[in-house]
Amino acid sequence: MKNRILVIIWLAGMAVAALYTGEYLYAGILTVSGIVIVLSAIFCLLSGRKTESCLHLPRAVEKQTVFQGKLELHNRSIWPVFYGNGSVICRNTFTGEEQTVQIPFSLKGNGTMQTAFEGKSLWCGCIKCTCSNWINTDFLQIFHKKKSTEAEADMVIMPQKHILDLSVLTQEGFDMESFRYASNRPGDDPGETYDIREYRQGDSVRQIHWKLSEKLDGLVIREKSYPVDDAVLILADPFLKETDPERAEAVVEIFAALLQSFMEKRIPCQAGICDGESGRFHMEKICTTEDYENMMYLFLRHGGSSKGPCVVQEYLKLSGTQKFSNYIYITGEATDHEDRYLREKGLVLTMRCGQKAGKTEDEIIFTKEQFRKELGFRSVR
Image 1 (cartoon, rainbow, N blue to C red):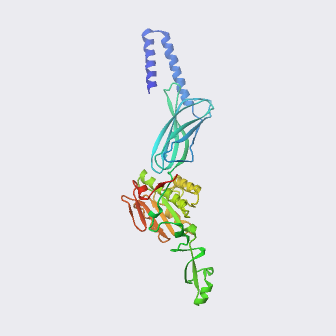
Image 2: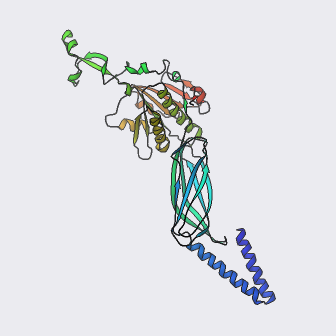
Image 3: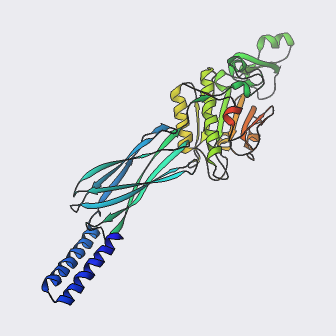
């Protein structure tokens, strides 16, 4: 706008001078100025027509870490771009946090350039960066034209590593021995027997305890116990009715801390999350740091649905749904009662966000302000 005002003043001054003095010099300067302005406008229309852009981001960084991205530009035309300005919008899909980074640049004809930009997120989640348009300006910087482009990239902001006190979850606490034989539920571990009962129609012949059947003069069945790998399934759902970064962060950090804690205690567990876009359910055994990082990446990158909680329903839709002796369900919604569908499958412990912390035999309520203290969080070095 400033340059436009100066150009208008210049042209008006030359016109007044030419009329007042009658000198051809001022008329010539006015004519040349007009030609230059027209050429500058034409140049603005032609330049940047074949410019392609691409965004590059790291796959994942830790929370409160400054990340560096790159905007790569390719000019496929002979016309250079003297002054360009692109807007990269970075949005956290988990928390709604958003920031815009302005990137000025120039490009020679048939040239390529990379320009770096920095950002920082205060919350965990998935950062989606997009550059949907940029502005091309002529060499006098009095005309500009908006150019469309389709450049996007995303990365995950991982939570800082913590573990929590597993004794907070149940009165007995979680340990390896409590799950090794799963004495509270039958399963399919051929190495251990859960219970002996009378034969019922439909039972497998291979489950018949032949020696005991002979002694009791009737068929009895040996129910097997759960294998160690099927001891615990941890399900997390990030759905929130209203955007609330603190509650979303609490769900992420508790899910991550649980996985870290189970790994530290060497308690076999599996974790499940749902891709809200495709509806696909992901379930993995968490044994190594790589397993943990892959699961958290999937959770932050794809987890959640804008329609409602989905992870429990998608888990139950699996063909031949695998049963577990214990389920831990983490939700940020106080009114989320999807856990009721799990109770016929095994023991369920629900961890939900609420206004006031509390605990019952099968439920833990944490607050978004003090959940780290309430669950005994400790940093992992």
